[in-house]
Amino acid sequence: GQQVMQIPQYQHVQEGEDFTTYCNSSTTLSNIQWYKQRPGGHPVFLIQLVKSGEVKKQKRLTFQFGEAKKNSSLHITATQTTDVGTYFCAGPSYNQGGKLIFGQGTELSVKP
Amino acid sequence: GAVVSQHPSRVICKSGTSVKIECRSLDFQATTMFWYRQFPKQSLMLMATSNEGSKATYEQGVEKDKFLINHASLTLSTLTVTSAHPEDSSFYICSASRGFGNTIYFGEGSWLTVV
Image (cartoon, rainbow over all chains, first blue to last red; front, side, top):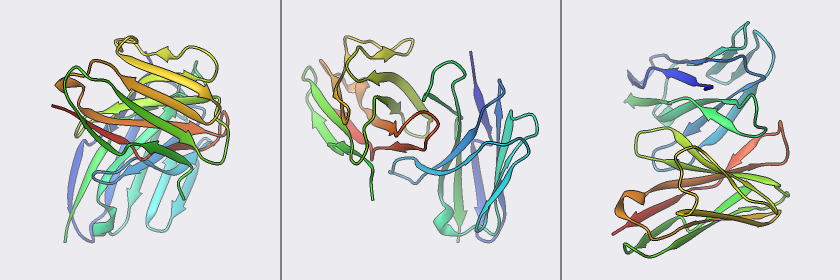
């Protein structure tokens, strides 16, 4: 079945270092979404990428959508302790509207 | 502010009892809502799709008789965990969107502990 894979599972960085998480889908996606879940919290929508090769920035966060629309990445420049949490990518199901297929998530910890 | 509200945020119940969790879309109508379950340090696992006015669609491996879903109105879906057991203890989250292709909003989640 349709799968979304995400690596790494965990990433520990020193504050100020960069961080990247990668997402790969088994199928071509119409869009890809990124969510952040703080410890003990619920997923919060960060961004949606739609176009092939699209790059979007939100302050220190850079999101990319691959040319084939099967992979994506989230890069954080100069991490801060407020970046701590788990980052999930998610793609829509190809045959069920509104259903999201989530990656396993990358848990980011930042050492001050 | 929150556009999808979930209640209760935390609940403790005894084994064998039933617990109801509510998911409300606050300022929009949602014909479809989704219920997820999340174990610690793991991803969100879709349990079922809640359809207003019709039966929920359950994912493979999810017991429909144990996890009862009712989507009685366009702004409310409920998940009832029946005859709860300690292994049902988990974080349950709902989501909804204004329509297909729109941003999906998650509820705050409900921590269920069965003792």
